[in-house]
Image (cartoon, rainbow, N blue to C red; front, top):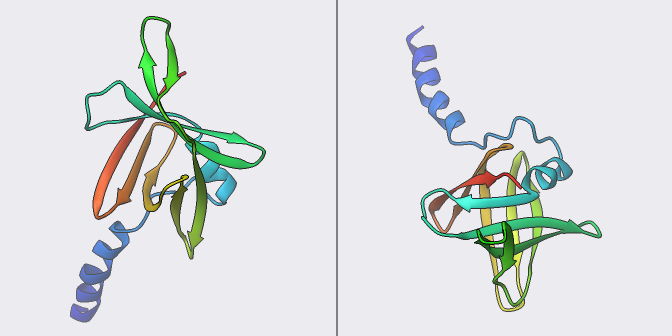
Length: 130
């Protein structure tokens, strides 16, 4: 009984460190949830990231909210291509731009919230309704 309790106390916290992607079974599920406008919840800025798809490619664009015309203006010179990588049951995003490449682990993703872990730091995003 005591050994069972110790094992439960050891392994239960490890399950909390995993991803929370219950509704995502495939890369297409991830892609469909990513598409849209996302604002960094911790930064008070008009800059937003926009995921969109063209010819089965996922693309990321940095945009700025234009409140005057109720639209988004691109602030990127070049788009960033995004590849969804699956390693076992975990998903990562690989960002590939003209001059650089980086990766981020998806810690949480649903219709309203996204948490990415990049370079040891968590980035929390909230979806902006279009």
